[in-house]
Image 1 (cartoon, helix red, strand yellow):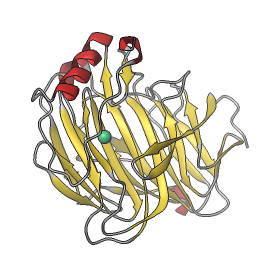
Image 2: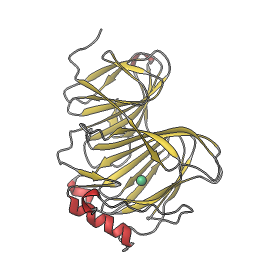
Image 3: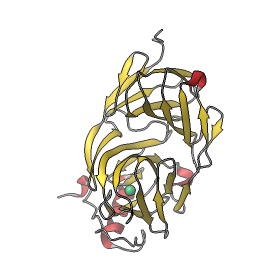
Length: 296
Ligand code: MN
């Protein structure tokens, strides 16, 4: 039975190039900038990597956001200006909080060869923490919860889902879970959150709307349950949060509120004035393009 009262809108991801990878960018959309505080979603791969050639995203800066890295397959090496050097594998979470400034690189591991597939998400930081200190967390073990009726299980990356709570930092009312589905699932939602579904593998239908990799479905607030129909194994990212109350300005790798803030971050990276620090990386540093409003 279809529940036509559920408010669902679908969007097409667009392709972009990140390092050596083509990604499906499901967020932001022109008419949908945020889902809760989630403001960016890149489904990366699958593609083949070697010991010496991985994602290969050289040092680049961030402000005002958190990066959430989650792999379905393979390994990648994260390095940042805090001195973090962390290999990530499937089932593990890398969470970097930029605050006022951080820079990082995503490299080959030096030992892994094979398939690499994952998703990198950004979370907009609220006013209370976006000017704060940078930080990095790695979570090797995250809580899992079984879905009802043997429909599959969920790993909780951020926030709470199905009674399981992630230990990962979150600065706003937010959740993220990876649903591994093998049958029709009834998915509980917090009705005070809006949600997004991004299918990473397989296919699923929600409220009669088919979803596959390359699409994003948005579910409005006021929905307390979703039915996901699958006809084979599927992996679905469920993202949710309270609608973000602050209008954000997002450009390149920066999440801010004004062009002036972005101009200042751009100038700091261009001039290497010390705000972002240095990443020890084998990859070349990525130069910031000039913001369009500064171009002659
Ligand atoms: Mn980055």
